Image (cartoon, helix red, strand yellow):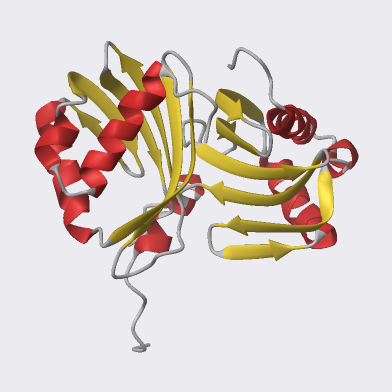
Length: 123
Length: 123
């Protein structure tokens, strides 16, 4: 997506490839111990809490389409479509702050209603 | 945000600056007539429909904090925090496809519940 892969983007893509391949241990090797992550309706603090959060989402993932990936020395941004039982066309964006090859901060954006199971027909 | 501003990013930033300055006419000058935009819960087709959509959101905007901006020849990504009456810390991401200085496609991501007015205390 970019002519050269920046240091932050290389880390973000390695992390992204690992978790979307359901390799939680490798994914966590790119996460700083003191990570903070802002997700819709939640703030996650620390690698242990993050591992639980990522592990839960990973179990729902059936596929992935990555749409855009950019970065510089310290920041990387990914745009992708996670495939789940509920949807495969709802986008997700992630903005990573990277230091020394580890993700220290992540801002995760998705629309929670777009990932909810379809409503049933009961009134 | 990037060492050099790519063609797509230059267009996206000019558009972004215009609409966040409440200059709808200038913002629309960067929008292709046949734009398609995927927003949470909505697909917008064509410049006329897009103008209505953007105009409605613009009236709610009280400020903006832009967090990241990247691009290449054809694609640009922005991460920002729109300030509204309801929130100033809910992120929004936008992925633009640009051709000949016009935005032909936009994928807009935000979490609708994060921008909803706070629930009142009635049961």
